[in-house]
Image (cartoon, rainbow, N blue to C red; front, top):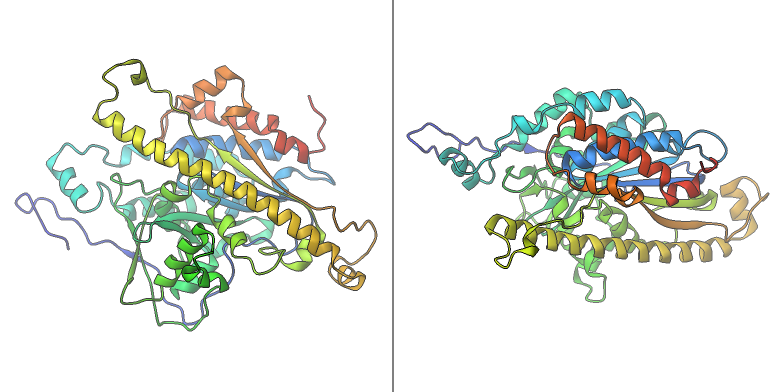
Length: 451
């Protein structure tokens, strides 16, 4: 136990350590796309934003289910991968377990629960100041247990992607390495840990562990427990010509096998390093050894269009203090500084991903057009309709910007919290559905006539 204070009235429990060792961990990449992809394929990246993100994303999922896809079904059926950061981890995990279905259950268990009322939010009391001194006002393990009990019902990461549902990559922030942490096969293999056995709730709680509000969630690194080789892009850690993002991720990965440096990985909110939930896909592409990776070659041949859609609830600054010569007070200055740093990182990440997807499209077309007919026939099953250059990789966005100005401003004014009043949840769900139906990126994928 940590030190007791205030006459023994408060005892801070030691953190629970997540993770179990594995001598033969499951291997894989950072962005598990496939197998069995064909035609139109969607990747949904659910951004951070607390309950605001979780509620807006439900509306987006409803919109996807309402938009027909070419050849039958809905666009929700074409989602192959979801990624989630912070509040966006909730809808991403839900889709991986249930698909774009059971909306009423999502509303009841995720959005209508009073998560905010269950946590300590003040730092003025001596007790909470002590807790803050111990790393955070709240224990993320208790939050994870509640999520496991009431939302995810004991589900494990290995349950994602079953019965045709999407694969999922959730992210958090490795605060020691100043880098994103991905709950993905490649990460667990590097940790020599059993990834499929980890609770979904622990990953979601780590992704949502806002600094100060929560202590970091702790995972153990089992250096020496396995001999599984790391990804080839680990060499970028010492390559001064490598993209900086790839190099930083490689250094973080390398540290997980350095027992003298890292015994435990301490995780906080994904929004600190991966607010748009795109870092896993970006690193996977930057570290790709083939023109088609992270797609398998047969999927790359059958693919017609891959669209990465950012479900983004980011807010533009709407502060009143720019009209005041005195400027912001202390709390406002902290919030503004944090927002400025995060906003800059978000814009850079979006632009980096757009450039990487453009390069990927070019590489895919060149690779496909270099295949001989026997290879195409082996992977595609037929040469009928084959056009080697008929593949596109695009980036889209569903956000408040897809709504009329009055609706956009109303949703942007909603605060980032763990839970929201019912009327605000209703507004966000309706806004998400309307934004999805109006989104140019999704309309381009759908064969539904414009209304």
